[in-house]
Length: 323
Image (cartoon, rainbow, N blue to C red; front, side, top):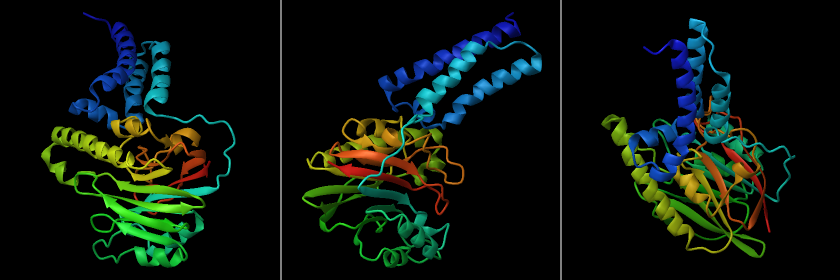
């Protein structure tokens, strides 16, 4: 019969091996199996729980727990799963300020307060998601529009939930197919001699599947994300000029969608943010699912989520330079 001391040693080293193997399996299988999808979407804190349990078991039984695999596992979690940004340089100031924010239809705050907050950000481009009239609440857009006087406005989406505010003139705009039940929205804005295509998206979160069981939810979500990202990539390929893409992707940084988008665009926070950058839920964020991407026509000066709880998401703000 295996001793407790031997079990603790095997468990610690085995868990370290699993942590190192999991990214390889993800690269091979992606999110096509429900358990892999569940592990990929789990908050980084979940990967630390087995380490805490093993350490606690050692303390309770007064058996020494091998420190090397514990420390190594913690470092692997930090490096591979928490996606920290260790940027020690001072952030610069960019000429173009961009903000993306899922405002949850303004249900967590009065529209006037939310409007004043957006006005204070002094951004050149503001991309909002979930801008619609909720139960017992009026459309939050009119007071926001009043506060942002002088901005050009574009609105689209299934129920008008996607909004782009631009200080620059808008040449044209259009909705595009994103799959599932939500279209995307783009607008061509004139920045001096350049025309920049600005995309606003909100990936579906599949509330209607939550009663169908966890396995079905994860499987169908993975399939839908793959299709949505394929359609988004096709839409991006139709434009060869400068691009800004932002919104609520409902996908953590190491999942398939952000990984694929990073092959052609820059993740602003990954390049110039600090810390973990989680944006959801706003009161105690565990996931980074809201992003600002930019093509390589831009230099990224700084990016960060803002610590406010006007919604269930935190807004993300970035400063860019157009080369």
